[in-house]
Structure formats: C-alpha cells, structure tokens
Image (cartoon, rainbow, N blue to C red; front, side, top):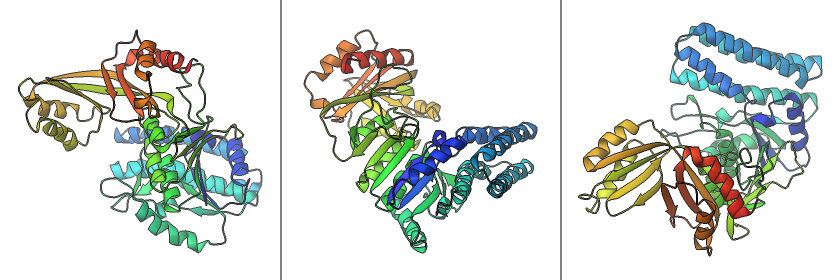
Length: 439
C-alpha cells in the first residue's frame, strides 16, 4: 500500500484537486491519500479563533462569512453536475453552521481545536464528492477514528496501527482511501491536532502503521533543494538523502518537510519521496536508509533562535553543573538546538521564548547569564561531512565576512551548524551556495 499526502497548495484550487484525482488513479496499487486543508484555510480559522478569544464576535462573523464565500466559489468550479454541487454545498453548509454556532459559545482551548479541524474535514469531504462524480471508487477514512496522541501530545505508531488495521479490514475490496492530515484525538477523547505541518506527520505515521511501500509527500516544489530557493537564485533538487540527513535538514529549516515526518518512516524503513504536484514528471527527492553519496548535500536556516550564555568560573567545572543547567530546560520542556562550552562558560540555543524569563531566572544562581535574540542557525548537512577532508576550510573561506557567534561541529557526522545574527542569514546562505556548491 502506498501513502500519498497532498499539502494545502496542492488542493488549494479546484483545478488542482482535479489534478490530484488524476495522480492518485495513475496506478492500481492500493493507497491512502492524506489531504491538508485548502491553502489559507487554517490561517483563516486561526484568525476567527483569535477574534473569539478577544470576544470580538462581529469580527469573527465577518471572517466566517468571507471564508464561506471562498468555499462557495470553490464548489462551483470543483464539481460540474447539479447533484454533485448540491452535495458539496451541503457539506459547506454543515461546517459553516458549526462555525456560526460557536459565535454563541464561550471560547475555550477545546473549542479552538474543534475550529482548526474544520479545514481538513472540509477538504477531504469535498474531494470525495468530486471523486464520486467522476465515478472513482473510494472510501473516506475519518482520521479521528484512528489518529491519536497521548497525554504528552505524542502519537504512537502501535496505537494507530491497532485502530487502523481493523478499519481497513472492513473495506478489503477498496483500493483507494481518503483521510485527513493534521487532526487527531487526544488522551481525553477530544479533537486535537499534530501542530503546524502535521499533515506530513500524519502521512508518515500512517505509512509506518500499515508498513507502506512508500510515503509520497506532494507539494509545490520538486523535492528538497540544496538551498532555500526563496532567497537564493540558483538551487538544485537533491535526488537522494538518508533519513538522518533529511531529519537534520527538516529540523534546521528546510520548509518542504515537517521535522517530525522522518522518524516514523525511518522506524519502519518506509522510503519517503518528495514530489511536485505541479510538475509530477520531476524526479523529486527520495529519502531512504542509504545516503547515496558522501559529502555536503544542502544548507538550511532556522530563524527565531535565542542564544543563552552562562558564565561561571566557579561552578562550570564543578561535578553536575551541566546536568543542573539542562534540568532547567527540561523543567520547562524547552529543547536545546546547539551547545558549546569553554573553561568558564556554556552557551546554548533555543527556538522558543515562551519560558525564557523563567529559564533565565533559574539559571542566574549558576552564574552571569547573557541572552541574545534574533539569531539564526545555518546548518550544512551531508553524509559523513564531519569526516570530509577540508570541509571546514571551504566553509569558513566561503563565509569569511560573516560574524559567526557559535559553531557546532562533531556532534553529528551529518551536520555542521553555525549561529549568526538574523540580519546575516540571507547573505550567509548566498555565500555558502557559491562557496560550497559553485552556484
């Protein structure tokens, strides 16, 4: 069985939904198709929620009306027959009736999750109406019946497999299944989600749960590129990456793939392919256990980084000092991206300011604490690059004019990371593109 996931831009226009229908029926292999919400929908639902959180019901109503008008226009071009359009409009009415009802309900976090779920519920149901009109046999699989997270917000492949397997068995004659990305049920049985980019995560989790032959992630770009094509003029798609390389790139800023997507597929050794809905003939990128080649593959940047330095000539070398420092971050569930140490200081980076004030307060008894915001991590990723001859020489020659404030080297065989002020991010990526790839 094959898993095919299509993002918001891939289903964001009626003609693109039509194209998706063609792509998923090209071969006879059984498949589960995971759909995101139509592009822009989740942002609109967040906007509606924000208005409700501020008790601005009139602004929320206007946002709801605007979004409904968009879906009514979408339906006119999605389905051609009167009967199919009526079915599609009934679906739109059902979900926007819910959104209008919430104008009279007290806002809560649980309601917020329900609101956000409407995008994926709409896209999949509307897509199924089109498939039915085209005479394409399929079965809608509600993700809320099998996608779940535990009390810590973590999904488990085994739990998903236990729920999904008997559901699929009920439809043994079916070859095509449609389901929602992103949404799930939490440990309390409430509607929840896998956070932004969670549709990739859904696809990978489902692929692992059914031991899929491949997990295809379809977007609007032809694979993972060796640099950010939005800010660097000349970039190339990478044909093959290892799971480890792809995980590093996704975590450190490659936007095409959600960072959590790799782990489930890697555990079950399911190949992941990154493909372009708009150019389906493009080779794209395949991610497998094997790297395919040695050397630098790509660079990526992660913004919104905060650097924290703790200086303490008295305590740094003391037994258990680093453990005490890390326990502070663990207490506030704040992950560390980079770490460097010297004889009198330890520096770390984090990507969330949510508990920054509390973290700094608890670190201050250990020594003098300095905080630098508006930083970016630029990562150079490839197979065994930490062992590649002269890689550091080429790297630092390329960025000679950039003020690098931290370097992480040796912690991974596949990654060298640099911390630079955010205003130097674009220049750094451009210089690396020239110095490392000759582009």
